[in-house]
Length: 379
Length: 138
Image (cartoon, rainbow over all chains, first blue to last red; front, side, top):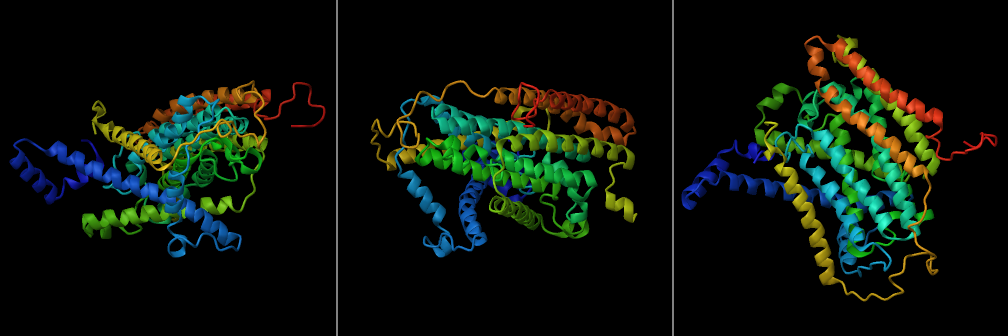
């Protein structure tokens, strides 16, 4: 088992003791079995945490929108309405699963699965902390780009298979939007790969520092613009307002999931909210220092290993959830943009700027040997 | 982490299995908890209460196809840029920065050329008029 979280736990004595005593009682080497168990527990915990964040995301969405519009929001189920997502999930579970008679049955059932698959497999490389990450793949960011494009396939398939005009329009829009905005996202990620010299999240995080002036966003003027290109394209990639044209409720009923009811609709929604969290996590890792503790190296090295991991996890979630708040804030502030403007923003503004940033960053690397702007000024 | 060892990707496979379990679990739970009572009226596609007219699988705007084509060009290009980007820092530190920069910029210039060509052809305009642009509509 080649996993970061397993190798983190195997440095503790209780892990080795457990392997030893189990091997003695069972009579064979149980290292592989125990490490698989540790990995499964870690993966399950991460999945549950992310699914809970996705569920609470719907609650946060309604509560924050209520706050922005001077309303109260959900407040009946549980304290402050906190159990609202649970009530919604239960309600959707008991709803009838309607299947349109003219739809393509196999693809209709496949679409929500592709969305769920595309989102939950990205969690495998989510850099929660240096030790508790499921795995630090050496193609980390590349893997995330590749796998999360399955969501685009799911959105298009959902729209196409329903055989309903609203769904078809939503699915078509969704597919063209998601593939278009993948270009600026990929190019702004390449700029970060140039700066850090590797595609794994471990390398990207370790070439930044914990304090804001060591983050990649403040590394040079190009990466500063690059962060906003990444974030805006990410909003479009996850179908968030102001780019929520695939599910524009005032013109397309609800876009690609018009014909979906009950649990399948819930899975679409869950995948969408978890994807937003993954986007925020990746943005904070690439540009905002990731899980690095905002403390000098000398203090961090004296702390116990478990405490470091815990604080890194806390820092990671604070950064990601702060960006999550911004995403919701943007939705309830900006009106939806027109479909032709959506495409021209991507191809005529974001993509040229992203290429310009990439050229700038690579020239900066050669001219200034990869030093940050602040370091050059205050040296 | 050895690159020949496919063991590295085992966590990915396990996460995919977890995704399958989530999907299957949710669908089975809803099968148990919900009562199915399909009627022909319920199973029609939603068209604001009217009887659906024709099928949705009909001819569609060609613009979406063009966007797909442009995307493929740019996506392949950016995939090819990833390996160069990954070794950029390493080669820069041992003093080959200039060479890599020239190679990298020539890669990027192909990309720029592509976007300039599409822009000039008018393929980046969502609403494209095949007549000369008299009315001033973009």
